Length: 163
View 1: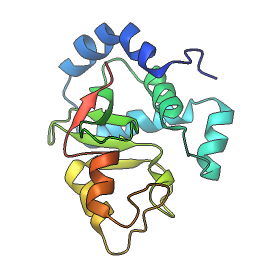
View 2: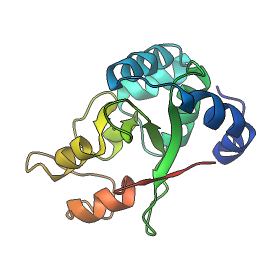
View 3: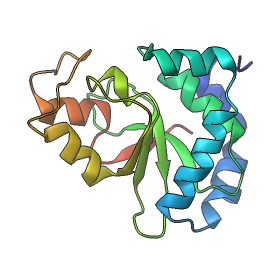
């Protein structure tokens, strides 16, 4: 498994690579999606098993860090949390894409959205549309009955970088 136990230390150590190298490139969301899929395929088996089983609660930092470690350094992506003052600290990825400057990739969204399999790839608005859909059942958050509050606490209208 990933050797860096402290998620925040990983980002501090790699700040120069993540910010200066990767965010110079322009990719489409489809290109980022393909790069992230390749990184997920390269994850250690124990992490892939957890993802396959939907055993995601509390795994967002570990999974996000492991994906970032396996990404091509030119991919315009960084780790993030909600910038909301009441953030629950959920970690996910944010990509700076040609068509949208704030694309969200959340490999562990299934811990909050019942029945969601695989990572979420899309714009923040698409994520918001999913969370506010009458067909979406929110789980494992104290805001399960309040989509607006849940969205703000988990993802927010903007992200704070992890570095």
